[in-house]
Length: 275
Image 1 (cartoon, rainbow, N blue to C red):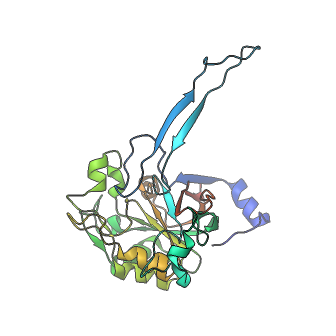
Image 2: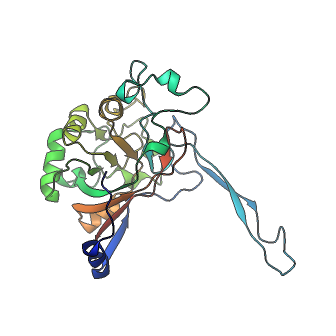
Image 3: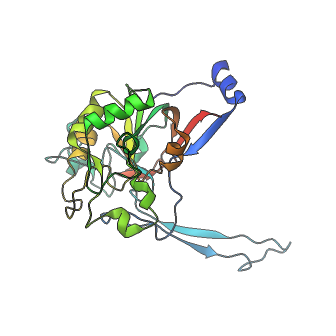
């Protein structure tokens, strides 16, 4: 994760003109989400006209209920354990005492202002959407990096497009319980980890390959990335605008909410590219 001061070169680049591409979905009641996590709900608690101030003014507000892994979000390192241990050998049971994680909570996810690489696997395989249950391989990622003209490196964010995000508006199809969902294989996860990236994301609910009928029973890629290598995972990304723009290398701006002790946090990921 790289942060930088707004020096003359950066300011000159901004003044020359940039385009900001959204890499996340808007949050709304009823949107698609993992069956393992609480969904998102928003309703108006107070409406205009419910109370009117002496000067004629009125205000409206809302109540929001959500899980930390709903909508476009980042997984904290507290999210997954293996054999009772979190990343770095932290005792998972001890960490979660008291109703929140005292180690690796979402508040420890760094703000990420760094180099991003857009790996369009659907494009290199010549399809709009990868087939259900397809396992993205290390070779697929290498070919996508060649197409992008950039390979992920230390401190970078790797965004992988499967095209599955096109189904986000159809919750049943997007979750793909019966059909399966494309995603990263363990082989692909090791390829990314070897490049020492800080985070990686894709346009599906679980990030990794989900075979037909398997559901989210076993998620080995989460173990490889979160537990073994301390690499954050971003799920439910929106990649179609970036694909249409043909981006490869970009300035990534990812700033998750600092929710103390949580296992994940909503994020609004942005790709900043020359206009």
